[in-house]
Amino acid sequence: MLVACLVVACRREPSADQSVPATTSISGAAPTSGATVPPSSTPPPDARAPLAGFAAQMDLVPAAEAKDKTRLGVVAVPLGTTGPRPLVVALHGGSDRPEWACTAWRTIADNHAFVVCPRGPGSEAGLGWSSPADTRARVERTVAAARAIFGDWIDEGPTVLVGFSMGATQAALLAQSDPKKYPRVVLAESAYAPEAAMSFARPWANNGGERAIFLCTTPGCVGTYRNAAKNMARQHAPARLNDAKTTSHGMWAEVMQSMRRDWPWLVEGVRGWEGYVAPNAADLPGKTESFAAD
Image: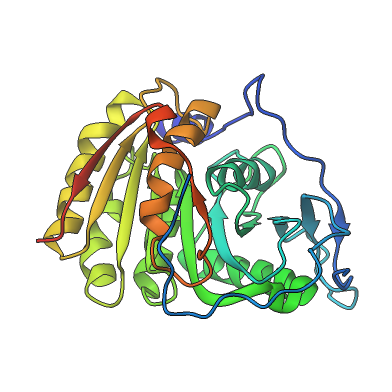
């Protein structure tokens, strides 16, 4: 009974004031023609005609010759960009949807990045995640499908990895396995199963991990995630606790706005985020606690 309740709790339907963009299935089409985050040492992206001709959010499907025709996931596209943009990989929660995940994290990142949201295993009414190896394979296939469409529009720099609930547990395990590929991480609302959030700190921070945010959408999450953030700082990687001050388990509109406050800190100095315009933090809800690296 407890397992069933936890899976249901991961479900996050959009709130009434939160719309989900329509999706378009494409597998091989070629693309048609406040304050800012301090730039890294990377030269500015090359100027080109603005990215256009795609839906703002669309399905990623296997190539025509693939035997498995299961939809891979969803990508949110930074339409209008005139140069390469960075990559965010977002893992949805249990009984959640990749479409909802892309809507949330695209909003949080202010449409600056390509946000790739792999589809977990299961039926449409009960998507989840299984093993870390399966999750890694799904992420790799979905990212490859996005790169096949958008080519060098997607920057080759580090990937920001984020996850909600069951997806946050998988994100911790995935980040731990490849810290240099995923040096910036957000874990949201996996405090109900805190082992992964606590244990990934040492291997991740000691092998290339740089900054982590622990995001809470329920009061019961705060204590556990505060301990996880302190543990991360003890491993010499700075961390933040973002308490959205909401009372239900989900990536609601208020949660997205709270997370926007800490996103500029998360991506500061990362290749591909040059020119990203940070929101006015004074206008955003929630509360942040910061933990400097020991």
